[in-house]
Length: 85
Image (tube, rainbow, N blue to C red):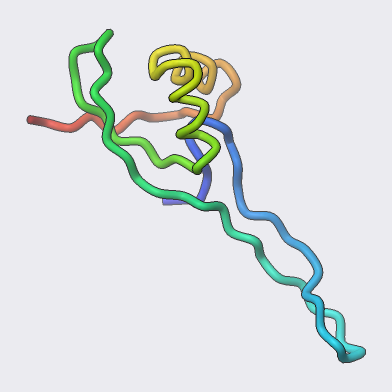
């Protein structure tokens, strides 16, 4: 599974590694990702999403259904993992 937020589309960035030597190297800044389960009321089912902290705040602000529709329209959300309960 790639390290990309399914709601905001955030992914790892590359930047300079600050050191006190002449050698220049690059480093990778990973995204704060975690897997979270939600109950999607409109579809009456549990789903699992890989989110960043900013994605979780977006869901809290807009609501789960609106955030999923916006992410699908932008192309960030390609598949949803449905959970069986």
